[in-house]
Length: 303
Image 1 (tube, rainbow, N blue to C red):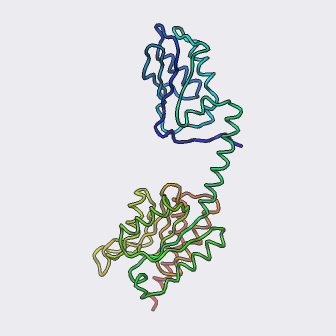
Image 2: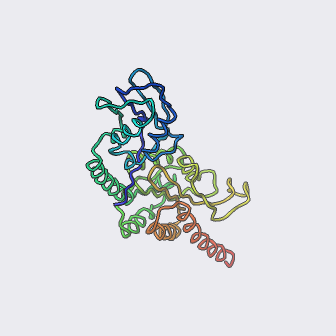
Image 3: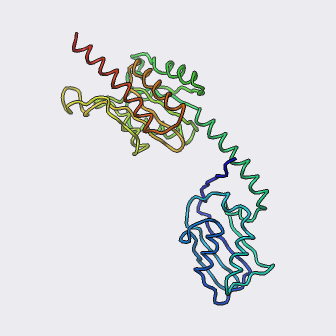
């Protein structure tokens, strides 16, 4: 297995060396020795306290690869014990909390435990990625004025691609309600793929793209077509689709017309077979829908 398990330290970044003798020791040299032992840059380890028989250091990073630190207690004590003015004895101990507690484990047993944990995390991540939920949007859908034909279509296409799919009741044209539903689906309910339909147009009521941007300000929202803002019912300057991220979840906002939903999800699934990069998904979906819209416009002009 490739050794890589980068975890959040959750702000527990202190290493304490207790019952250590200090006599004119160079603190910069001590920090550098610890950094070298852990495979970190010198400027990411800092001595924050040195008094009596206590030495305290801080790791200046939020995430760290557990494989870099597991079982390194003895190596750290040997490293600082070789510095002039530092006296490490059999009574000297190293203490750390949280993820840095891996320092004190037996290296062989610790790496085996990390291998098991990493494999479990990969399996959990794979399962989450294949959990999908579908949200239709639109006041007319909520009121039952029109039939929601998109959700059954999306369920069929997604299940055929190997996803487990859940359906949700229609969401009204309300930016905050849609944004809240997207956040809840990813962060509370653990879905790896969230698909919305409708609300991507240029009218005042259309707000799905704005809801997506509220959840992910870096979301990709390419235009399918542009209008003159303020002309007719066009309160906005065009029609967009959207693809963004929230945590480990991928968010895709498709138009409302059934034929466009079918084309859009097909293009998205074509990309998702290989990777989950929002830019690639957005580009593929926008491309097929622009072509579809071009055909529709030519048909309208002909008639």
